[in-house]
Image (cartoon, rainbow, N blue to C red; front, side, top):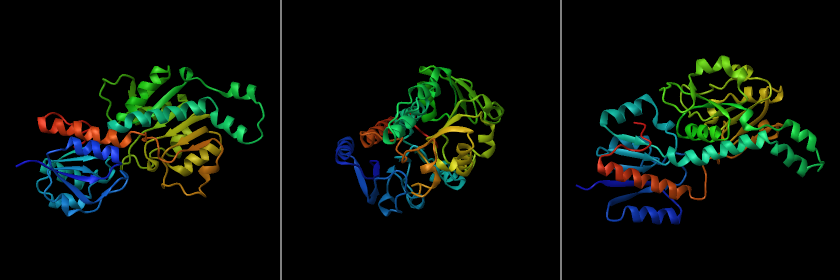
Length: 323
């Protein structure tokens, strides 16, 4: 019996053509209501019942009926909605592999984080505000307040695909990088510590970049105590998940000068309401959860799935496997 592949995602024409070509001659069934967003779950779809492989963001309710299911490949970097003990235990018991698309998002997210860091270090938001406002020529003030990465100590929270790539980019530009990981393995290319080891050292850190996923253990972990432990004038970037940060504490840290600047690609809630004070707080940059984007995003997602499909059929290890 050939493998039946359920497609629960929809893509622009160029990516759809690539997917059709890659799956030509295979047993493919398309969901009744495929979704383009990788941030929301698909519907409980009976079209998935006889599938061996699923590509998309399937509803958890669909797993129970899909008795032939062997592998689920998500179009997202994270897998929060599938990370409960009940779901992960069921997947492991049934021998179902779960993979993500984190590799696809590592490069754009790391690039976005680096751009935010550099913009704050080189005072670009202040220069833009001046250009939109009084159009003065504050050359001396901007020069004196600017930073170079080779003189900065950067803490990267999390060492998944995004954190790893960002650490590589920062290291290449001369920054002194320390990575925070729950279970350091000892083979990381940069200094790697646990959270309890980092906390007393936060006063030495110039820039913090949060790449942590949402989980019960990370919700609100960047809290008032964390910000209070930073040196005055630190910078904070979040390209992980908004729920990992106490936003009230973040706002206070910006207002009292603990943070010189913050750049947030993720917030809680999302979208960030227009009246939220973070929009108008001096020193705060907000981007609309766009760090993972690029013009070729959907084609990259399809290529990643097709590459993993080839591995699956050969019996090789799957990329970005989490279960």
